[in-house]
Length: 320
Length: 316
Ligand SMILES: Nc1ncnc2c1ncn2[C@@H]1O[C@H](COP(=O)(O)OP(=O)(O)OP(=O)(O)O)[C@@H](O)[C@H]1O
Ligand SMILES: [Mg+2]
Image 1 (cartoon, rainbow over the protein chains, first blue to last red):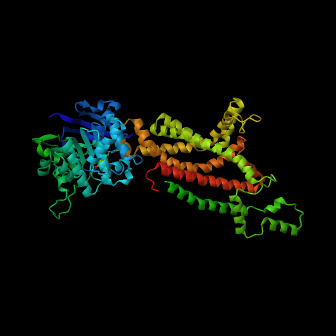
Image 2 (image 1 turned 60 degrees about the horizontal axis):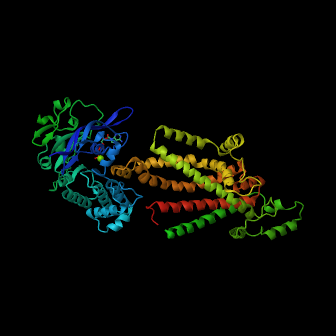
Image 3 (image 1 turned 180 degrees about the vertical axis):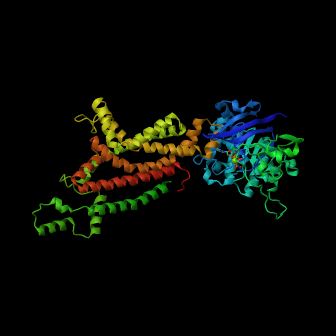
């Protein structure tokens, strides 16, 4: 099947006077139509910067220094700003981590949904209003007329995230990028939001790029998992294979650090160390300094991302 | 909303009351008493006592205060010591409209110039136009009003002859709006510059702060172009805090108007205050102080109400 989104060798960094902080370091990724991908990795590994690169909304001074992003065969990085505006919100939309701050406090909920429908679909205000009520119903609101007139501060975090999802879905995008959509919410609300996203996906066959560091969320929603470490993909596999048979020692560590449901009383496992500053020039594997299985080769050579088993790739010398 | 306005207005009353108390005490602290200025120094002691009795100067201080307050509430501020026979309220109310006109026009000029400049500065952050605006703002802060006023008079009135050097209207001519505006431009502009620099900087920093917010990123993610993001999603958020500045600007406008009115011989309250201060005309000074304070309270009240009108997060 044709890929909806293909990212090739994406490099994103934050240049400053002295040096450039590298956030994404040669990332490859593809998403098929209707597929749901989870991008996981610990804080600071470059997940958000990957998603902002796709939208071309990197916070300044961030910039993409290399790579290609193909969306339905179009090269997004070569589009003019005006053309890109027609992609954002219409073909690719985003759901953000912080529902509390991602809605405009001085505009009504209605205005914030209606404006995007009018903008991309050229509907008149009345039709856009009807469409936005439909969207609010879709995300689980009942008294939609009233919600339209509310300001964001009157809604709870979970309700706001539903509004954000309604906005994201309102122009029937082909791809939704959800950057930690449930991190800021409490557990029961998290489950509801995930359920909602699952339903939407089933109904509209929308592709989802789900960014998270919560492996529990991954198993709920994703078909395929891409594990990122220090701006690079280190492992990629179907969701079942990742949990059953993680290849990369980093993935193994991530899975071990999820508390087990069976109530084992072992201490929570944590991977020693942290994402080492990507600025330092490593001669070897970026994970080597923290890797329990590292051997001498890991410190001198850089491993390639290689297909170890069918549809299961890893960047590790253990499998070469 | 109406309820909120009424509540806020009622809250302003104790404040005004406090202002009158403070003003009255200051008046009492002023050296000497009115009899010393009014009366023939050769007067007999008994007659002096009789005078004091007549004017209530021997009453306990709180009785004097309430008498004064009662008179004032009826618009009676006493008589001018210098211009014998003219009541203070007559003096003031003849000039108040001129001052209010000057202040309102200056406020409008200040906002109309500063806000667009602040926004331009914020959206072109660290580009040439931002630097130019910043430098001019700092020059504006550093330039004293009276000096700037004199320079403008010298250039535009004396050398170029475009504007009159002062006054509200051409002497001897009949009333005309254009003539008024012609006289108003220079003084209003000079008074406006007093706060323009601060207002520009404040708008700039608010706008920069707002443009960093998550909801701006959301607006961009919707596909909106830069202008729509800035003006629809940024502007209102950036301007709401500027409303409070309006309340803070008033005192400096009132202070500034004293200087500006003197330079442009603008027959307003500021000029009256200036002259009264040199002539130790206490009743006039007191009345102007009270009216000025009341204006400040009123300005803040308006700012509060505007805030509630524009910011949906304010619950009332
Ligand atoms: N404004 C910035 N200036 C310089 N470097 C930045 C900036 N923002 C992000 N970075 C760099 O980009 C890297 C990746 O950041 P990113 O936000 O993508 O991480 P993340 O994987 O989304 O983490 P989290 O799970 O905490 O959201 C960071 O480690 C940091 O070094
Ligand atoms: Mg992030």
